[in-house]
Image 1 (cartoon, helix red, strand yellow):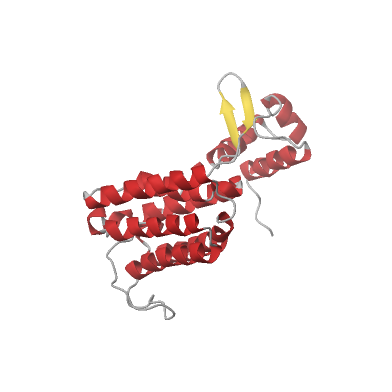
Image 2: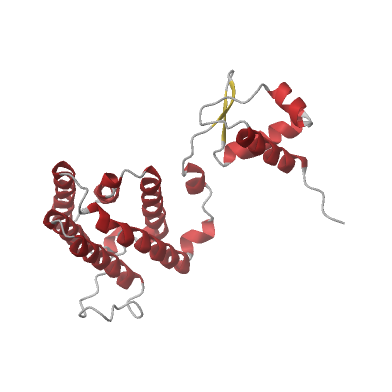
Length: 243
């Protein structure tokens, strides 16, 4: 005999189906609780439980005194629900880096022909701020995050921007416990300077190579014994895992 599906799970499925059937968009309201429960053939209690779980994953938003609304998609719920075990799992960090490398290396060449002089100047300023802070022994997480988001802005792809932000933030959280005192700040800053210089040259191949070198350095720092790139000369391995 098949296990009985809990009422709140049925409510989740019914609510999501309702949103799809009625083509509701972010910000659109759902019917009042009583009407919605009647339309779906369930109790108000089951409906409320379903709404609570969909709120937790960022699909719905309950506004006090106003009702229930479809919520715009964000990665907030992913950040908040990252398993604690992930933070201490070195393999998870390597897996994430592999996906992030493929995403950024695969798309960065497209930026070469689409970035405006103003955007390149903005990236140059961020890279120089990183260099200055590195020389002063300061970290520069804010500038680093903004650099990667600004870099892909010319592609006008909001979903890509969200993915880049998600990967950057999760990567930072995963390796954050290692301590910023072990980062090779100057090498990381110079990686970003090289990316800007390639972008200024307007050569997609040079830009892709600069990004490849940046991620190769990160990979070496995570696993220096197995991550050497056989197609490039050996280089000193910095002690940073800064993204």
